[in-house]
Image 1 (cartoon, rainbow, N blue to C red):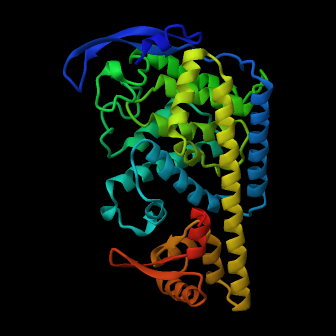
Image 2 (image 1 turned 45 degrees about the vertical axis):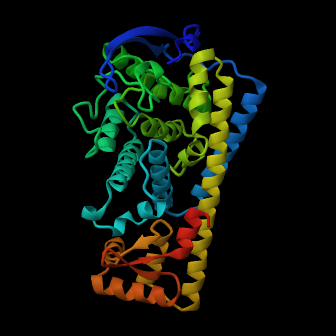
Length: 395
């Protein structure tokens, strides 16, 4: 890490570290960056506030779209799985999006290690969303539980799973030594645990609105602080981006977790990392908050457009069913398809409460109507809804 860039930081300080480099086996003496605790909302420029305002408007449009859906939770899965695939790709774990969307028809024993890791994110996010829906607050304990769920069964599933890291980490070494790392977060120990606790306390206070804190600015600040502290041995990027959505839900900037932020950041990976580092170097929040707000605006617009496309597909399916005078279980299945572009007979029976035979007959009817296409995956009969898949993938 180029310490000359950080030694004059107005919002943090350098602390000496030493140890043995895992790459070379040589001992090192270097520095890590320790950010100061977050305080009040910083003074921001008019142009930054305009970017924040545009992002707030885009989130409002997404809120309105979800409010008109009878069961918005159905739309959660395609959004969440797209986010899971993209946020994992940002951290170097890649599973094709179609494979992630089709995971419910792939036997667990046949899932790739990458797919299992992506699905860990889905499970962790569902735990978090359910926790907030039940009125619980964002806590250190919740984030630690999410970390344990995220790394379960992976190389990062060590003694540090579900707890703040006990080792020094360096970011962006690319096989080189610690001194050549792009960034070195604060060392492990009591100071790290205290910094993590301070951050989560700060995040919880943002829903009290006592200081008039803007929820988007608060989310930008918290995301910077989380990534800079780097509290866990692995998964910080994925958890940090999940925390964005959780904080927006907590602060009522979102009513449903239907926002996918990682595809936008993934497409701008270098700029994203540089913008985070620049806050530490200069203490100027304007470039980062502007970049973050632009990302939220674009993500909200994109997510809203995809959801509108899914609802249009659902309405088309209803027209087809009306024309065919189809009712009952067939209609029930269609209402679930916008969240499940891949299904098998067992899925359909579980979703509708129908018998296996009734679900099979209904699936055959939907194939005849052109709503489903039959396919075989790993020797098992399954189906895909091509129009739903196209709406999710925006083809």
